[in-house]
Each structure stands twice: as structure tokens, then as C-alpha cells.
Image 1 (spheres, rainbow, N blue to C red):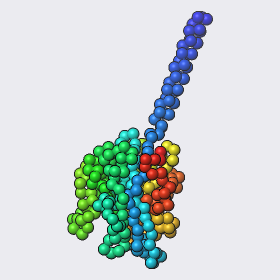
Image 2 (spheres, rainbow, N blue to C red; image 1 turned 135 degrees about the vertical axis):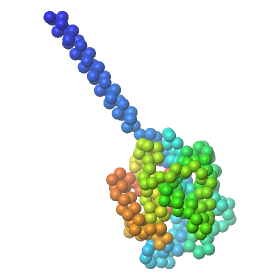
Image 3 (cartoon, helix red, strand yellow; image 1 turned 30 degrees about the vertical axis):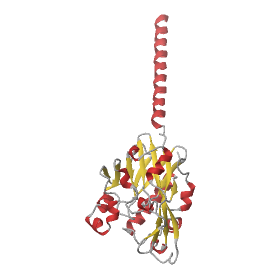
Image 4 (tube, rainbow, N blue to C red; image 1 turned 90 degrees about the vertical axis):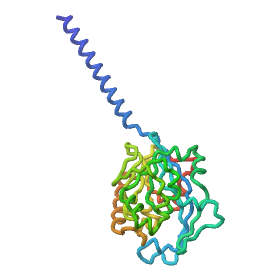
Length: 292
């Protein structure tokens, strides 16, 4: 009888040991599954925009007679599953020009110092290394070197794709269409899109500036959550007072996108970076340095 009790005790002990090992294994698996991949954000200079008629950036006369200089950044996001180009700066035809270019209306004076291929050399990359390219929208100051990435997959909101490839756009503003016409590998999306499926790089639908405008959410291991705002806001005053450019596609949509953006930023406690703000551009480390 004592021998039987002893054997039962041994078996119970082994069972408990196995259960403990199983629990420890499960715990280890959970930790492994929730580890955050290393994501690097590189910031580059895509040119400079001097807005000579700042009144274009409000529905009222607030900025009448004022001018302002804008940054024009583009970004490289390096993820273990692939590399993403976010926005594409001003047209590369500006590189090498002796003087900045002013458009016929006199509203904008633009310049760009360097090509994307030359800039990517700073981080040891070429356009062929990129899995994806995505633009906040298809205005000329965000699509400048897009065609260079014709071997990458273009992640584009369906509404933006329909807008930029429409007969109306091709006939009335061929330069906008020509800036993206060589992008043939296309993935159309509707709404928010988690690029790598782990929550670290997410395209957030924010229409209004254009039909398929979007912003970029990043969750970096050290820097934490952040939002690159595209052209939802061009500078800090417009964010503070919710001012909307007169050339936005849809004012009502823009306001709704602003509300959704601010709620999301608060929920995630995300740092917001305005891509045309010189102040925000200067806060970012420039390639070859990066945020992670």
C-alpha cells in the first residue's frame, strides 16, 4: 500500500512538473509573439516650397498678403519584411536648376537639390531594394520621384487611383498623371491598411485634401507611436485652428478626417509630425541617421 501511495506521488509530481514546463513554454511563446520588430525611419529632403500666396491655405482671408516657406520631406521605412518609400518630394527636373522655379500663377516657388538615387546612397540602398511605395496623395510635391520606383508595388487608395488616372486629370493636368504613370505594380486599398500585418506601419485613410489622401502611422520600438500627417495639415496654425486650403477636394471630408486623425492620435498617444512644417522637419534626424 505504501509502495502504491509512493508511486502515485511520483506520478503526480511528474504531472505537475510537466504542467509547469507547459505553462513556462506557453509564457515564452506569448513573449516571443509580442516582441516588436525593428523598424527604422529615415528622413530625406525632397525640396523646398515657398508659398507666395499663403491665403490659398485658408477658406477665409486670414493669411492674405502673407508668404511662408515649406519643407518637402520624403521618408524611407525599413521593416524586416520589406522597405517602404513614403512620399516622393518635388519633381526631380528641378535638380540642377540654377534658380528656383516659380509657377505661372506666382503662387509657388520650388526647388530641389538632389535626386532620390543619390540620396539613397547615404543608407546603402537603391530603388530596387524597395518592396513598396505609397504616397500621401498625388499632388506634384509628393510624387516627384515616384516613377523611379516602378519595380515596387504602389499601395494606393482606390479613390486616389481613380482620381489620378481619370480622363479629366490626364487632360487637364497631365503632369500629375505623368508623375505616376510608370507605376504598374499596383495594390489598390480601401480605408486603413496594415502594411506588414503587425501594427507597426499603417496607412490611415484621411480623404478631403484629395479623394484618396492618407496619413502614415508608425509604432517604433524606441521613439514610440507617431503620425506623418501628409497634407491633412500643412503647418501648425492650420492644425490648431482647423483651417483648410481653398484647393482641397472636399471641405466636409477634410473636417471629418481631421476629427478622426486627432482622436486616433490621442488614443495612441502618438507624436504628430507635419510634413511641410520646417520646424517638424528639423526635429527629425536626417539620413543616414534614423528613428527606431
